Length: 243
Length: 243
DNA sequence: CGAGGGGTTGACGCCGATCAAAGCTGGTGG
DNA sequence: CCACCAGCTTTGATCGGCGTCAACCCCTCG
Image (cartoon, rainbow over all chains, first blue to last red; front, side, top):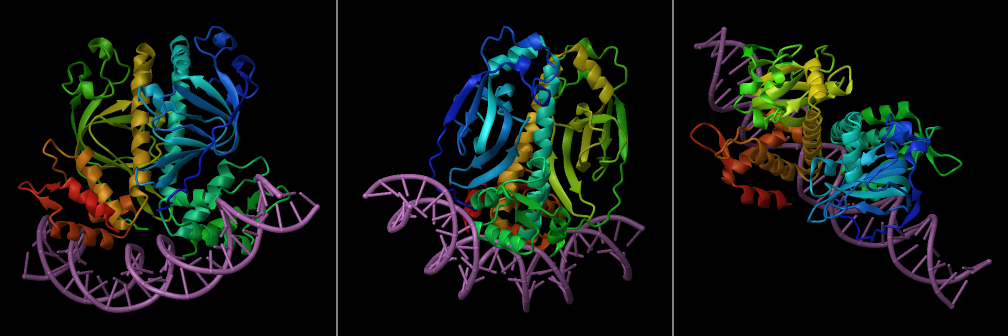
C-alpha cells in the first residue's frame, strides 16, 4: 500500500511534426500496418508526432481528450490512482502498443492515468480519425482487436506473475518481464524507480530496495557501461524458486 | 501459493439443442445482439446450446478445439495453472460474456483453463462461424471489441482490487465484486469454495476461512433462505478500510 | 455406518510493513 | 567550480499479519 509522493508531473512534449504514416519506417510494427499508403491522404483530423519528456502525463481518467496514443519508442505506465491515494501500476506499454483504446468503445473517459517512463516518442491519433479509417478499411478492426488481446494477455501475465508468491518471487518475475519485453537488442534494460517497482508488485519501497541489493550482491543483475542493467535469467528464475 | 488438489474435472454437458439465435430471447445481451435475424440462416457450422455440470472444463491451453463460448447463465472461471501446479483464478465470467476470444486473433491455443462454477448454460460457437459472420456483418467486430474491452476492465479491476492491501481488504473487495457483478436480482450470491477464493486473492485457505468466519460473526454477510449469501456493502467497505 | 473431502480453529514462526535515520546523487545557485 | 539541498535509496530494529502444520469437526455420499 504505497502512497505516491505528490510529485507534479509535467506534460512537456515537443511537437515533432505532422505524422506521415504512409512513409513511417516503423509502420509495420504499428497499429496502421497493412493499411494502404494512400489511406492517410484525406484525414478529417491530422495525426501528430511528439516526443514527451520523462514523467509526463499523457492522460488521466477525467481528461476530456479524444486521442489514442501509438508508442514508437519508450515506455508508458498505466496507473490506477484510487481516491485514498493508493498508487498501483497496472501495465507497462512499449513500442508498437497503443494506449487509450477504451475511447473507441464509447467510454467517455480514459480508464487509467498514463505516464511516460523515460523519454517517449509517440503518435497522437484523434479518435475520429481512427473511426474514419475503420470505416474505410475494415481490416483495421482486426488490428485494434489484436491490440486489445495483447493488452489482455499482459494483464493476465501481471495477475499471475506479479500477484502471486513471496516478494522475492514477484521481484524476480518483474525483472524477467523487464528483460524479456522491455529491453534493447542487447537485453539491457532500465530499472524503474523503487516507488514504481513497489507499485507493480505491491510491496513497500524498502522491500524492493533490499531485494535489488541482494540481486546485485549475488551478481544476478549488474550494470553495464551505459548504466543499463543486464540479468542472468536462469539464476533469476532459481532465485525466484528459492522459498 | 495454493496447490490445487488434483480433482478430476468432469466435462459432462447436456446438449440442449441447436441454437436459434434469431429467436434467442436473451440475444440483446449477447455477442450477436444487433445482427439481423436472418444472419444465421446459412451458417457453415452450427451453433449449439449446452448445459454444463458444475466443475466441467470447457477448454484448456492445449485443447485443440476451435470454439468460443457465449455464457447464458452461470459463472465460468478462467484459471492459470502453472507447471509447478500453482493454481490462480484470473477472471470470473458471467452471463453475456464470451470466453475463448483469443482464438479469433489466430492464437493456436486457449490462454487459460476455463471451468464452470456451478451449472452453466452456454452456446458453443465455432470460430469459423464467427469469422463468417464478421465478414458478412462488419458491426460484429465492434461487439467483439467490446467484449475484449470488458475483459480488460475486469482484469484491471482484479489487479487493483484483489492484488493490493491486506488479506482482509482483498477479501472485502472480492465479496463486493461478487455481490455487484455476479449476484441475482436480489443481490444474493454464492460464495465460491475456499480453495477458489484463496486462488483469487492469493492467500491460504485458512486465511479465507478465518476472514469469512469473522464476516459472518459480524453479520456483514449472512445466508438467506436459499443458502445464498447477502452482504451489507457499506459495512463491508468499512471492514475493508480497517487496518 | 464409515470414509473422505471440505471447512474450522489453534499454535507457532517468519516474511515483510513500518518507522526512523543515515548515505547518495544530481541539480541549483552562489 | 564547489557547496548545499531535496529527494531517493539504503540499512537497521521492531512487531504484527498471515502462511504453515496439525488436529478436529461437519456434511455428504457410498
